[in-house]
Each structure stands twice: as C-alpha cells, then as structure tokens.
Image (cartoon, rainbow, N blue to C red; front, side, top):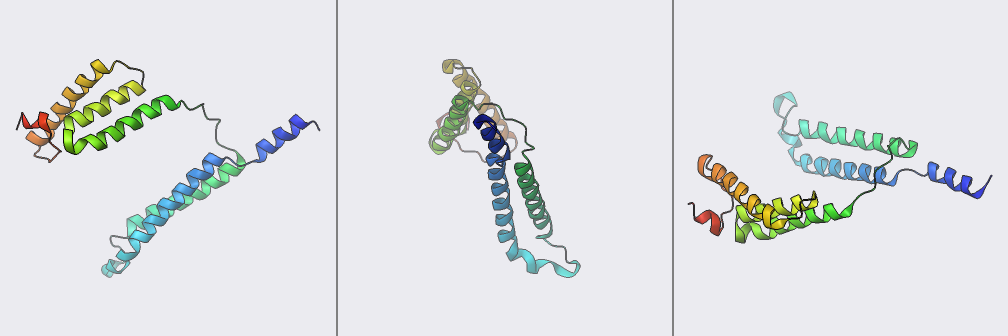
Length: 164
C-alpha cells in the first residue's frame, strides 16, 4: 500500500472534529439545563408535572442529539464543508461588539445602525457612508415604533432624545 493511500485511509477513519465539538456544546447546554432545573424539582405539585418538566425534556433531547452527533462524527456522515471566509465574520462580529459598546452611550439607533452598516459590509456592501445613515434611520424608525407605540423601553441616546 502506498504512503498516499495509507494517509487517505487514516484521514477517513479519523472522526469529524467539528462534529465532536458540536456534540460537546450540546452536552454542555444540556448539563446547564439539568443543573438549573434541579432546584425546580420540588415544585411538581400533585400531578408530577411542573416547571421542570419541559426543560428536562429539552435537556434529554439535547443529550440524544449529542449522542447522535458523536455517532455521525465517527461514521463521517457529515457532508464536506465549504471553505470558511473569515473576512465577513470579522465584519459582523465587529458590528456586534460595536453595538454592545455603543448601546448605553449612543443609544439604540446609532448603535444598531453601526451594526447594520458593518453587517452590510460583511455581506459585500463596503460603502459605509451610505449604509451607516440608512441603518441609523431604519433603527430610529424601529425605536420610535417600539418606544412610542408599544411603550417598550429601549436604550435612548442623543438622537432618540430629539424625538421624546
């Protein structure tokens, strides 16, 4: 057997590491749910159905999905993934970080407008001088609807204070 063939056989026998990571995340989420629901077990009442019943079912379902994912990882049943482009991901993550940092000081409209513009840049619209004002105006309209009509509390900044 040639060396290339041996490497190919070894590569095919190796489990899918990304699938194993997904299974680990599923088990972690299930464990968190089990831990959080453990304090609700005494509230079942007379019918043994209480606030812990549905979260328990969800946690068991997540464990089942994790087991299924591990089996699929060892069988190599997952389709071949496309090459990941990290540039768009960086733009979107930068938008999320900017929104979190700006939300309290700049308000909802500006912070979410920045998120809109950076997400648009991640999808290929790199003209921030167009997407930023469009995003801010759209987010201001959303803020006016939610804060004015629906009476929900969204963070207000200097732009929103002009409309209060």
